[in-house]
Amino acid sequence: MATENFKFDTLKVRAGYNPEDHNYSVAVPIYQTAAYDLGSPERAENLFLGNEEGFLYTRVNNPTVDVLEKRVAALDGAAGAIAVASGMAAIAYTILNIAEDGGRILSSAYIYGAASDSFKKIYPKFGIHFDLSRNFDNLQELEKEIKPDTKAIYVESISNPNGALVDIEALAELAHKYGIPLVVDNTFATPYLFNPIKYGADVVVYSGTKALNGHGNVIAGLVLESGKFHWDNGKFPQFQEKHYTQRDDKDNPRSFVEKFPDFPFTARIRLNYLNYLGAAIGPFDAYLLLLGIETLSERIQKQVSNTKKVIAYLEKNEHVEWIKYPSLETSPYYELSKKYFPLGTGSVFSFGFLGSIEKSKAFIQALKIFSYHANVGDARSLIINSPKTTHSELTPEEQNHADIEPNLIRISIGLEDPEDLINDLDQSFKQVFKK
Ligand SMILES: Cc1ncc(COP(=O)(O)O)c(C=O)c1O
Image 1 (cartoon, rainbow, N blue to C red):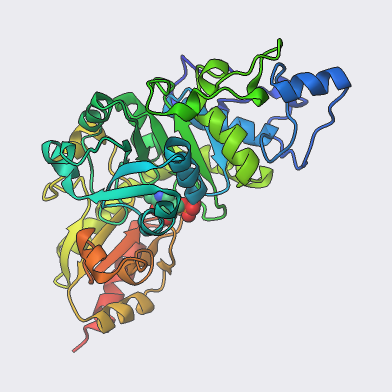
Image 2 (tube, rainbow, N blue to C red; image 1 turned 180 degrees about the vertical axis):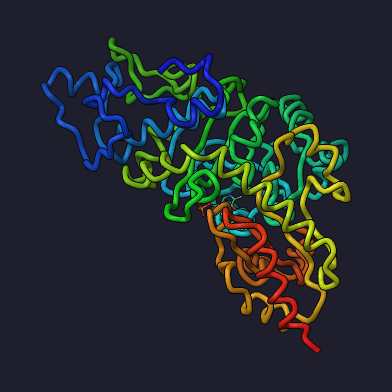
């Protein structure tokens, strides 16, 4: 399906899929197969050389996964996309693809705990070092942190768990001034609320596990590219190395930018990292993710509306010290939210529990509707004490650096009736603070 002229809600149910290519099946079929018949030795040779389009082996590509990749690429206005087994795999392959020969990445300190911990623990052993900065609110200061070997800037469009926003357009300009890409984790926002590529981002990563899927039944990740970044600008020699595996029909080795000029970044992840490190998404999981995406707008609209109602209740509650949600007028990110998030800033927010840590645990325990677990973006409302769970990898000093206060409670609002959610919070507060 040509995608250019269709709007978001049409693309989310149709992009990337032609029924006539799949026995006229209306729903995207699940191709539950490890490999594909090669047909003939000639076809096999062409497929392996990449001179003919087709499927070889599900670790590298699969028709169900292919629809998912094309669909999300259409929603994000991306030139290329690759789906992988988890959000963490998407981040890992992105970092390695950019800085596999060492260097630095300038990342916001306000990011998902496991990402932050992996930046500290895993990558330095491979010569990739991270500067976790709190200067993303002040780009003049941030610029001073760009070093000669900085290879990328990394940020979450709505940060986990604090809901920090960044001026993505200005940040992209800053990155490009130094010939480096801007990588945006757009998990909390989803392409329905925000399109990082439109504002200059070069690479977008998703945990598909969250609101994209929306039903809490899949672990998945995606990497997308704008197709505009010049990977052959001299800072990323790996994109200019010539490989025999990417040879042309006269056996001349080619580089990734030569063979895949429109989407070298995701092509290189597919043929190097997915192929050789192997975190492939299964076709059934890709199918579940596609199913979730069909109702993305409707879910997010209702979740944003529910979130505002629950926050309005919490704002008046004497046991709530503060609320962090970027589109609140009291938020330091309110102006940015108006510019970048006209449809709302999602369904995740955090609040400071005014009371002892013991009481906050009792509060979580006394809830009847909210589920206590580590996901977000689910159809069900979820609650979690992030400092002791999703961000527990961080030391107290690191939590302080990431502005994660000890009394922080993170909430992800689902699709239930908002009145029931408010009543549930209310009965729990009353139970914990009863005289
Ligand atoms: C913002 C963000 N990015 C990435 C991830 C990792 O995703 P996954 O759990 O699918 O590996 C998470 C998980 O919570 C997240 O919140």
